[in-house]
Length: 297
Image (cartoon, rainbow, N blue to C red):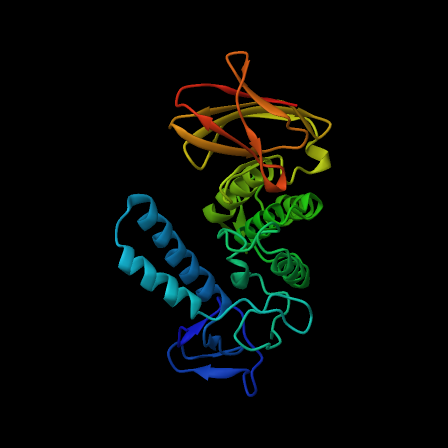
């Protein structure tokens, strides 16, 4: 576990926590944030260790150290569900002094991390949904961007669109540049743009997922120049919320996996490509760099 630490920037309601005089700043503060092994820490550490293990396996290096990393990961505090059905933010099921705090640090493992997904862990994904709902809306530009990304990863297009509209009307300048309490804020602007990309393409689970969280109001559109993990370019168009065309443009040889509603096959140069349908409606095939692969619906 990590100690001392905190779950930026929320206040756990442990006994005695409250307003105090901070000798460093010389002002009174609402409460202390100090904690032991907050969920965000565990998410980041687990993901770093998992990625090291994956890299070691791919490169056939550091087998002993990778084994130690796996053993260390197993000793970390696990995700826990609290009394309200939420993903717990701290090692104990403390209430929040600010229940609708603008930070969502304990949901790092959902977004931008990839530990919790509806496919890998539906129980914890549901607990994460409860946590987002309990936080409410509001805050400032970057926190809207984070909520947008969370709802995209949890396949909730209605929640995503709701937060996006509030971001535009409550926390954006007329130029559409994000604001945080009046100050222009680039991480809110980029965060919202990244979350919009997550609504139309995701690839954090080892497969390319097309239109995973498309709001109904964005039912007709197109995208080009989008990149997925694995160095894959994507061009696609949709109408009434359904894909009408999609092309994958890999820059590396290797196996590709893709999911899209109604997907039945893959073609290259007008010929069918051998593929297999896996769990969660994911289509797997071998790809060659420089070849355009057309999805068949």
